[in-house]
Image 1 (cartoon, one colour):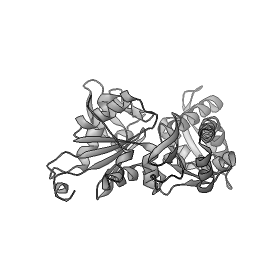
Image 2 (image 1 turned 135 degrees about the vertical axis):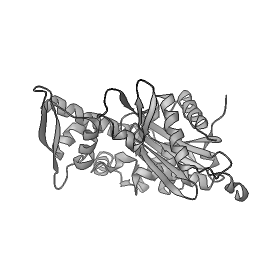
Image 3 (image 1 turned 60 degrees about the vertical axis):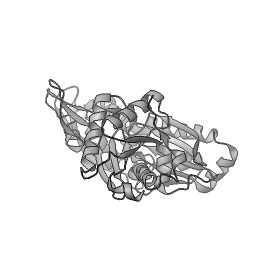
Image 4 (image 1 turned 30 degrees about the vertical axis):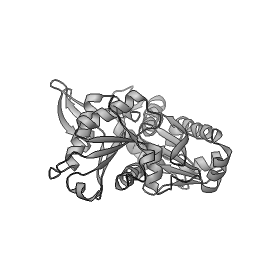
Amino acid sequence: MGFFDFFTNDIGIDLGTANTLVYVAKQGIVLNEPSVVAVEKSTNKILAVGSAAKEMTGRTPGGIEAIRPLKDGVIADFEMSEKLIADFIRRVVKHKYLMKPRVVISVPSGITEVEKRAVRDSAENAGAREVFLLQEPMAAAIGVGLSVDQPTGIMIIDIGGGTSEIAVIALNGIVNDTSIRVAGDEFNDAIINYLKKNYNLLIGELTAEEIKIKIGSAFPLEKELSMEIRGRDLVAGIPKNLKLSSVQVREALSETLDIVVEAVRQALEQTPPELAADILDRGIILTGGGALLRGLDKRLRQETNLPVHVAEDPLTCVVRGTGKVLEDFVKYAKVLERSRKD
């Protein structure tokens, strides 16, 4: 590399439904922002990107819309995704570099060819010289520090905002993967629907997220938690307070969590016996924001009888994986998919 380092600055992007993280080679993680764009409806002019736009969610006046351009881990709104990626790349790439950056972007393993092209085109239009795609479970495994080139099997469960990826990795490849579009966003929706159905209380997405983070759990807690929440009474139409406990939130999340547990079971059933023996020894590793849900590891341990470990700093595993790939392209060449122009 040497000489070219002066001219370019490679970046890794974990393009998530809820948050986008950016890693710059030799600098580390330099950006972690919500994947939200605020737009003025009449002119389609972008008013804010990232945190500033997220704060507007559910609070915007009629003329402003807060858009999440990624749905289920993939691009749903092409134009807005491009603006989002371009804004983030511009923020981290300083003009002193003469060449455009090479970009490694993590994508869900269940992504289609059309969706791959959308990601690649967005990044190229946003200023990338070359785009490499890296499957999320693989990025997470590399980020955790596992040797993905070994013949021993590793099972990773990466629960993000839009997708949960369950993959068994060995010899630089994904042996089997289950990608379900049930993850953090569905947990929020489950809380919203539960309160609507049982208490006639309407809450917004940000409140649901706050409930999930503060008192959400997947397994009974030693000391149950509670919090005051505010919403709108659907019958009277006026603001109303309610005291909510972690037991109720667990009930709200139970069906959604069952889907994740069932997907893990299916993934284990499809795993070749030799690799299944490795997983029994090494256990399952949980990454992604969903891994922070209290007691999720215990719930999975109970359901699978396997050791389950939550990765250190699970939110950044995927982007740290893209970073390690940037630092050693030669070593990780086999796990990358170079996007080709058709």
